[in-house]
Length: 460
Image (cartoon, rainbow, N blue to C red; front, side):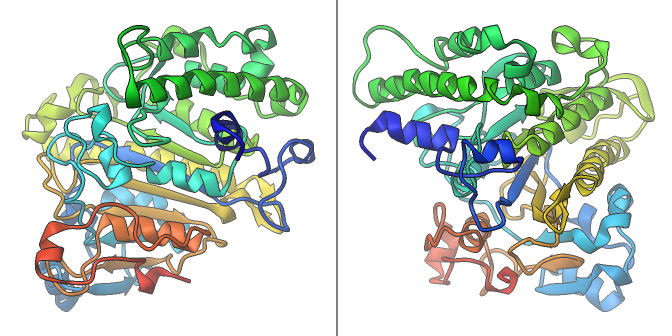
């Protein structure tokens, strides 16, 4: 590469990469002979995901004992019922994998993981200096580039507009994200909705000039380099948008519609309404070919929950739920389950919408992986001993998964696998031969257990 600007252009815009509709082939070369990229959706949830909540209720006594003892276990989902909160995925069980036993102790845990769960490093309570590496979602986006490269969505806290995200395009660099459906729709489809505003990008400039972005005086060294990169990123975004204007006719066919309740950030929209609208925008961005990788923080401990079935009139606090506080007379465990059901409803919608989109000899879902996981480990005050993953993978997934409940050996024992092993598996299976992604686990290192590389049983 000739200079940093060229690097940014290739990273952010995906020049020299992907295409879906024929019109995109004029700007972005296809990643393979078929011109079909792989797609990845990371859905982060808060408040932990207790491993027992994902255990199968119809385990045999022998398998239940092994699962409870956290011993290696693998069973066929076709022979079992799913837990209540996962039953919305029963029609698509052939694509489902419940992956138990991964640890994430090299990540931040307790209440929040910030960027660390996506990058396998300690985040030091969300400081920029602690962002150690490019996060896994951006690494995958580099393998399957697109006009936007990577899209981050978030319902963290009660934010709206363009705000700081949790993914990282580079060390010591924080991503931005769209914090409400209206903003996400406008920014992703700006070349259709308001071509005259495309080249100004005032909202993005405002973000980058805020305390999370640029500070004009008294800077030097790495901070100066980071700020220079952000300035050039804006220029790259403008270059991308000019190209997208020429394709606005094609993009307009994928423009999602939002109900009036989502105007001005949607202050009166219920949580299920917001989630459904964000799902529509997410699917539109994928089907339009604007991105192949999405990271979606579906809630955090500060996200207010309203309109939840069974608690329709309550404003539920996720943090009190973690401390077993009841709302509206409904026990905390039941409300936590209902929140997970609302998340699974969106996963099911993603699967069903993508299955309706023809692609190659099948559908878009065939080339898509959806991963739903707790950002902070196994419980409200997670420590990272376990980090369950719920995975929906299409038929063309490059991994040997699907229709299985898999429990890996427990932390600190021979054969145990970490979050870093899982991310290495994703990268190795899709063209990045990295030996190991992320920091190593100190306990595994102390015991001299092998902990590097992909999870071989999951490799195709």
